[in-house]
Length: 153
Image 1 (cartoon, rainbow, N blue to C red):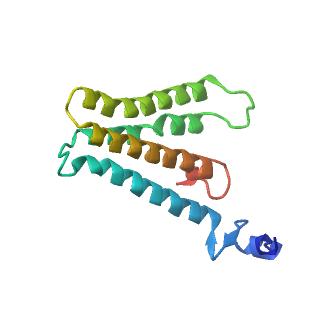
Image 2: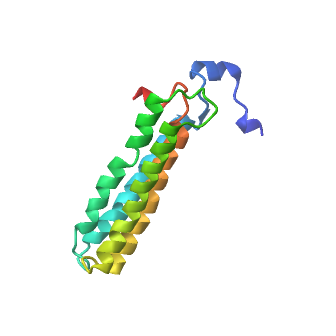
Image 3: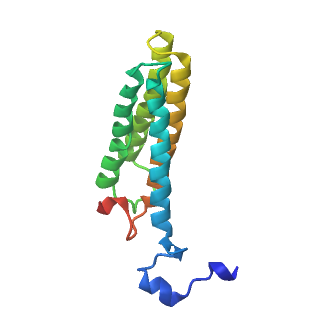
C-alpha cells in the first residue's frame, strides 16, 4: 500500500487533509455529493417530460429544503460532548424523519388521486432516494467538528 502512504510533511502542508490525485478527500466528497444532487434533480424533472407533462411533484422540493433544518438547529443548540442523547436532538431526528416520509408519501398520494401518472411517481421516488442519500452523505462527510466542517459555512 505504498500509494496510500502520505508523508507527515505533506499532511502539514495541506492543513491535515490528505490528497489523492491532487484533490483533497473532502473536495472529492463535495464534488460527488454535487453530482448526486444533480442526478436526483434530473429524476425530479422527469415528471415534466412530454408524456407526463405535470409539475405537481415539484412540490417535493420544499421537503428537500426543510429536511436538514431541524438537525442543523439541534446541532447549534446542543453540546456534542455529552455522550447521552438528549431530547432536542431526538426531536430533531423525529421531525426530519417526518419530513422525509412526507416527501416519499406526497407523490404516491398524487398518483392515487390521478394528478400524476405512476411513471412520474416512480421518477420522483427515485429522485427522492438520490437526493436524501446526498443530504445524508453531506452530513456524514462534513458533520464532524474539524477544519472542513459545514458549521463554518
